[in-house]
Amino acid sequence: MSAVSETIVREYFELHGFFVRQQRKYVAPSKREDDDIDFFVMNPRYEISTEPLPFILGSRDLPSISRAVVVVKGWHTETFSPAVLAHAPEIFRFVQPEVFKQAEKAIGEGGPVTKILVVPALPNSVEARDQSIELLRAKGIDAVIPFHSMLSDLVNYTETNRNYQKSDLLQIIRILKNYDFFKEPQLELFKEKRKKR
Image (tube, rainbow, N blue to C red; front, side, top):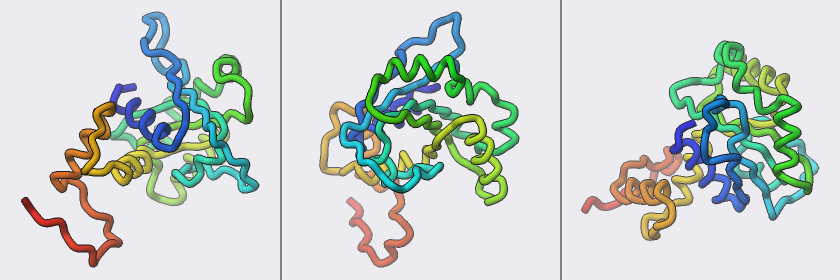
């Protein structure tokens, strides 16, 4: 997993008030990178919800997650279609009982542990998307978060008049916003355009 994908996921969960712990900062030569969980996240402001957690998570769903193990698949050119999932069994290693038991020990006590997979995208067609979701659920994954949702939140959160000195990612987003590299949402048809400098 690239450091950029990892940084995006960390910033996203921290933006929403989670404590984020990385499994390890190195890759042992004897292990494959995909064998382990990338992050443990804990929500200190966990809210019990009567609604079931949706499979495709958005920001409004995060308060009802107490603790989670997160695996990031930053294959930004791939769509997680049924064909890709069928030919990539390494995606599901983190939900195997022996790996997950170790994860539960590492994350500690305090509520249910959600298994989250961060994906580049799910298929656009309803039928293919439903097949992908069904396959992911059958393998034991509780939820997915698309990178698009994470990046959208980070872009919306970042202000051009703030200095994000401790975050290279947020600082880059701030600079890009300052120079009008992000398009306004299409629903804001009548918003005044920013004056060019």
